[in-house]
Each structure stands twice: as structure tokens, then as C-alpha cells.
Length: 139
Picture 1: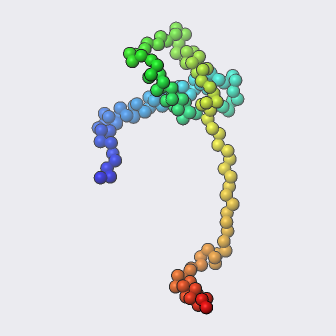
Picture 2: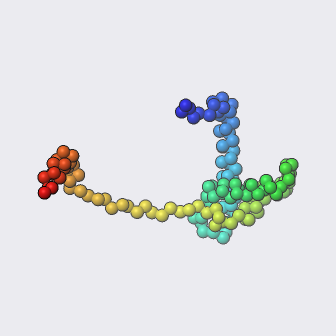
Picture 3: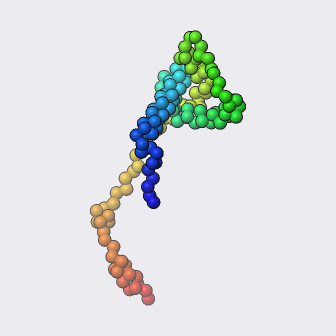
């Protein structure tokens, strides 16, 4: 009943395909991230960094609209003679840097420790004693 393993990925070829797809997707996102960072490096501070998470959200939100707007047959986008890198940089300039910026985490604020005396922390409270004390206090 509690078997949650995906049976089809138990096959070595299927597991290898799943792993290769994940590596390919991560490499595509890493190229997109570097393209956006390089395209905007002149206008932004040196410590600015794009977030892979925010990039994936941007790609995913635009993908559904592209499925509606584009025809179902595959499009052939010719790669310019100058190469793929300059083409990616010109496309990356259209990305708003604020929308894909990595969020910087502030410093951790240490919590104040609440100290108790040793007797109070290790004191044993007997339910029987509490009930007897409550009976004796009644008039």
C-alpha cells in the first residue's frame, strides 16, 4: 500500500533517460542565467545575480501563452551567422533584471536564550501531589 516508487524508472534505461533530461534542463537554465547576467552587466552592480528559480517561473509563465499564439507545426529559427552567443545576448536584453533577480537573505538575528535555574528546569511535578494540594485548599 505504501509503495511510492515509480516502477517505470526502475528500468536502467528509463532512469538514465530521466537523469539525462534533468541534466539537460539544468544546463539550459544555466546558459539562460549567464546570458541574462552578461547582457545586463553594464547597467547593474557587480554583485547582481539572476535566480534560476525566477527564470524558470518566467519561462513557464510564458510557455502557455506561446502554445496558444504559435502554430502547432515546428518553427525553424535560423541561427545568425555571427553565432548563437550574440543572439542569446540580444534576446537576454529583453528580460527585465528586476523580475529575475536573486533575493539576498539578510543576516540571521540570534534569538535570546531563556535561562531557567537548574532546580526549576529539572523539577518533577507529581500529579498526585497537585491533586492532594488542590483538595486541601478547598474550604
